[in-house]
Length: 153
Image 1 (tube, rainbow, N blue to C red):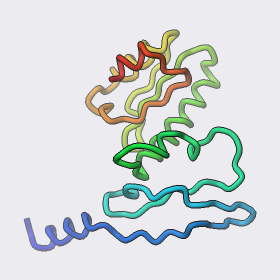
Image 2: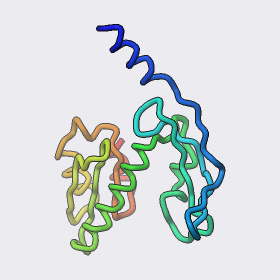
Image 3: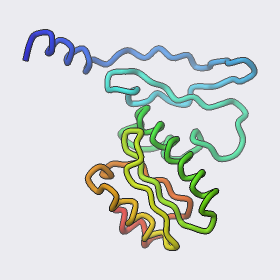
Image 4: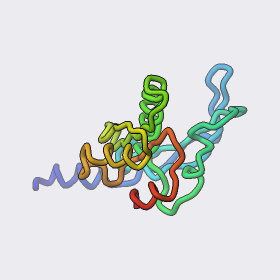
């Protein structure tokens, strides 16, 4: 490996210091920093997660997973959740009476399926690409019950 390659690799892995404001104003919208993220689009890139002040109802910023966990979320994790949620919502509008499971990995759908049964929807989605789906963000338009949780684990 050349010295230049090693230098670039070392620089890539060096953590950039975070310098994000506690609040941001965009016209009439105000956002407050909810948390720092593990990293941005790539390791070593800083990132922060903001929540709109006064936002009501369930949204990505109120999800419990964003408030807990030992490892912390990265920008890619949140982008995967957003993409999965949007795709699942669209499919739910089209297939109103079906259980839909969307698996996202690195901002790409890695498995998408629908079925009358929640376990079957997940099993079909996982079967699209079992290797890529390891560590995916899994989005459901239905409640995850114990039988499905056992299959996922």
